[in-house]
Image (tube, rainbow, N blue to C red):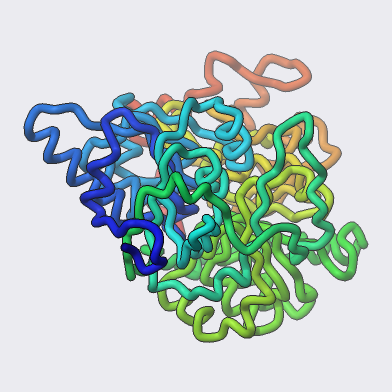
Length: 504
C-alpha cells in the first residue's frame, strides 16, 4: 500500500503499461512547474520499445501550458504524441507539429477547462497529476502549478498521482482552487483584489478513480532567464517612462494597477526596471507565471502580492520561497488557469498587460506564434485574454533579429494572434507608440517612425505610399515581400548593408 494507506503504490513503468495506444492523457504542469515527471518518461520508454517491435504507440496529450523538459521533449523524442493542446514550446515537438506528424490545437488558456468539461475534446481517459499529498477522500494538494489540473481530476476516467516529496506541503497555503459551473449557470467570479481567495486549498477527485500513487523527489526543471541584454533594458525603460506618464496624467490611479507580464527575458527586464524605479509605487500582479525576477521585488517590498497559476522558478529561487514560507505564503495566490486568465476578472481589476511579439505590422496587429504565418513557435498562450481585456495592452519586441536580416515591424503579419482593435501600445528598443485614438495611417506612420529599425523605415514608408488607398492601405502584391525574401534569400532585404547593424 501507499504512504497514504489507501491507494496502491506503482512504479512509473507499471502506470505507463496501463495507458494504451490512442489514449487521451492530461498531465499536470503549467510550464515545467508542477509537471508530472516520472510517468511521462516511462510512457516515452514504453513507446520506444513498442516501436522497435513494429507496434504503434501514440497518445493524445493535454497539459496546462508548455512542459518542455518534463513532458513534451521526452514524449516527442519517442514519437509518442499524435495530438497536442493547448500550448507547447518544445523544439522537437515543434518540428513534428510543423511537419504535420503531430496535430496541434493552439488555444486560449482560459478556455481549456470549460471546453474539456463540455466534452469538446472527446473523453479524457487518464490524468497524471503531481501533488504533495492525496487524502483517502480524494483531496489532492497540488505542487507549484494549478493550471488545468482541477478540471483534469474532475473528468478523467482514471487518475495517477505523482507524490513529490521535494515540494513544500505549505504550498497549499497559497492554493485557491475553484471550478466554475458550466453555462448557463456560470457564476460571476467575486474577485475585486488580486489577493482575494474564493476557493479551496485542494483539488478534488473521486478516490475510486485513482489507480495508484507514484513516489517522487525531483525538482521542477525550470531554466533561468537572463536579466536581459541592452535592447531588453531599453524596451523596459520605454515602458517605464510610458507608465510614469500615465501615472502623472492620472490615467493610472496613484495606488497603481495590477500588472501582468509574459514569460521570458524581456518580461524579466521590464519587471526589474519597474522595481528599481522609486516613482512607481508598490504594486500587485494578476498574471500567469511568477518568475525569478519577482522574488527580489517581493522581498524588497515593491511587489506586495501576486496572483498566478504557476511558480515558474529555478530550483534556487523556489528554495528561497520554501525557506521563507511565513513571508511568501500570504503574498502569493495560486489559481486554476481559467481564473488566473479570466476575462471578467482581468477587465474588472484593470490589469496592465505586458506581452511579447514575434512581429507587429504597421497597423498594430500582432503575431506572437507563427513564423512566415505557417510554422508555429509556441502558441498564443494566455496573451489574448489579457490583451483583449486589459486596461492597457502593451506589446514588446526588438526591432530586428538575426543581425538585421529580420525586421520585427512588417507591412502585414501573415498570422495574427492579437489584432489592432485590442493592441494599444507597441514598444521596441527604438521607441514606444501609443496607438489609442489613432486612425490607420496615423498608426502606420507612428509605428514606422518610432518602432521600426532605421534600416527598414524607408522600405516601410515606400510600402504605404504605393499601397492602394482605402481605410487601411495595403498592396496585396507586395505585403509579404519581406517574408518571401527571408524564405528564399535568407534576409528580408537581401541588398541591405548589415555591416553596421547589431542585434544588441
